[in-house]
Length: 636
Image 1 (cartoon, rainbow, N blue to C red):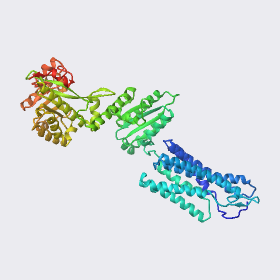
Image 2: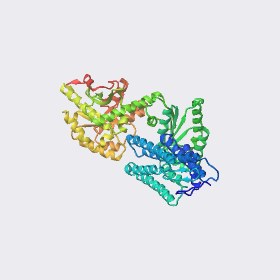
Image 3: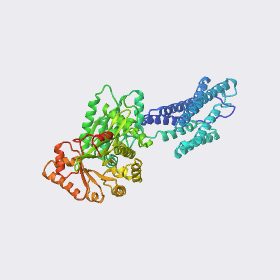
Image 4: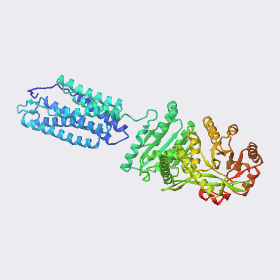
C-alpha cells in the first residue's frame, strides 16, 4: 500500500460511486425512451449523466491507485484526480446552465456566467497543476508518500453552490412555489451530505451529493409523460415534436381522431383498452401517440420513403372501422402531412380543429392545399374582425352594407329592403357572410359588426330621404348575442337618433331563441324599442324550432317565412294548405307576412295566393350595394 502522510487521509468505499453510475445509466435509458422533446435541455441532462459517471469512475480509479499495494505510476493518479474534479465542476456548470431556462435568466447574464465559469474551472485546474509542481498542493513524493495540501477545487465548488442558491432565491418569483421549494431543499440536502461526510473524514458519497440535485430536476422537468390508460403521451408535447421534426427536415403524417367520451369509456372498458393496444401494436411500427383531455388522440409518424404510406393508412383505417364499430363511439378523423404552406408548428392543431368544425361524425378527411388556404383565409379574416372590434369605428370601410329590395304587394312598389353584411379586406377581397359570420359569433365580435351595419344603413336612409326617395323602412339583422347586451336598446336608439332619421324607418330582424332567458330578454327589448316606432321582424320562420305560444307573446310586426316553407308548399295540396293556414292565421292576428326566396313568376303567384304582404328574392334582385337601392325606390 502506498504510504500517505501530511494530513487528511480519508476513508473511502466505492459503493457510492458504483451505485450512482448504475443510477445514471438507468435514468439515461429511461429518459431517452420516454422523452418526446429531444431539445437542448434533454441533451444537457444526458451530458450531466455522462459527467457524473466520468467523475464517479475516475474517483474509483484515483482512490484505487492511492491504496494500491503495487507500484502505480503517479501520472495516473494525477490524471484521474484532475478528471474527477473537472467532471464534478462540469456537472455543476451544466446544472446551473439547465436552471437558467426555467428561471428566465437574461441572455446577457447567461453569457457572462458562461465566460466566468469557464475561466474559474480553467483557473482551478491550472492552479492544481501548479500546486503539484510547487509542492503546496496535492503531489506524490519520490518515496511514494502522498501530500494532499490545499484543494483549489473547493473554492470552485463554493462559487458554484453560492451561484445556485443565489439564482434560486433571487429569481424565485419566476418559479411556482412547489418547484422553488423542491429545488432549494434538494440542494440543501446535497450540501448537508457533503458537510456530514467532511465531518467524518469521508469521501465516499461526494458523487452522490452531486447526483441528488440532478434527480430533482429529472423529477420536476422530465417526469414521465405517458398516460397509463392509453399508453399515449401528454398532448403538451405535440407541438414540440412537430417543431423538432420540421427543423430536422423530417416529413410527418399527423392523424387526429376525436372520439366523444373516449376518455371516460377507456377507463371503464377493458375491451376497448385491449383493442386500442392491439390496434397500435398491429398498425404502428414507429410513431408517437398523443392523448388530449377532450378525448382527442393524435398519432404522429415520420414518413418512410421506402414505405407505401397511402397503403399503410388505408390498411390502418380498414382495421379501425372494422374493430371500432362495436364500441359505438362517434369519431372525426383528420389527416394532415407536414407542408411548407403551414407556417407555424402550432398551426397544425388549429388547422385540425378548423377542419373538424365542418366535418360530420364518423368521417375521415385528408387535408388538402385548398383546406390550408381556407384555414389561413379564416385566420386572416379573424385578425381583421378583431381589429374592427378593437377600433369600434362605426364607419369602418372594411364593413360594407348590401341590401335586397323587398316588393310591397299592396303598393306594387319597392319601398322596403333588408340590409346585408359583407366584408372587403385587402388580402382576400370580398368576403361573404357564410365565411365570417360564424367566426364573428364564435369570437364574440358580431355585435360590433351589427352596430356598424345599423349605422351605415341609417346613414343611407338619411341620404335617400334627403334626395326625395320613398323609403318606408330598411331592416337590419341582429343576433341573439346582440340582444343579450344590456345597452342594446340604448345603442340602437343612439345610432338612429345620431343619423337624424325617424325611428320607424328602421326595423330589427331577429330569430327565435330556444333559451328561456334569451326569450325573456328579447321580449323586453322588443317592447322597449317598439315604443320608439321601430318595427320588429321574426326571421326564418319555419326553420328549426318554432313555438307559437312564444311568437304570440312577443309583439312582432312582420313574420318572415323562410324559403323552405315556400318549397314545402308546392309539394302537394296538404303542404300548401298548411303553409297557407299559417300565413292566414298571422294576418288575422295583425302580423304582416313576408316570403323569402321568391325566384320566379310561379313562386310569386303562389305566395300571393297564400296571402303574402311582402316578397323578397332573386326574382326581384340579388343583394346589391345599398347605394344602388335608389334604382328600385320611387320618388315621393
